[in-house]
Image (tube, rainbow, N blue to C red; front, side, top):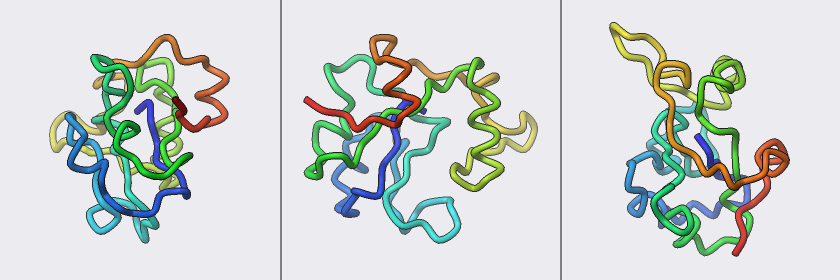
Length: 126
């Protein structure tokens, strides 16, 4: 997944329309139980690796609302599956293929982002 939306989010949904991967949904459309704010689907986020910054961050009016998360790769499969079980994420399930986990649906990520920043869920900044 690469990015998450923090509790700094004001639910303006500006990022929803900008996401080229359709990975971001409004709180009203979130798959989570009782969502508080806009949600990034981890199994769809591509970190906008082909742009200078993620599109959601580029349009977000609220400092600190967009933060780094772990890469959605096989190495972090347990991380995402555990957080899915805890209800932090709600990863899509295919009827035949099962959970769209990082091990069977890896996504591109920015290798230039320090792992410490990802572990700490550091907010993106200019």
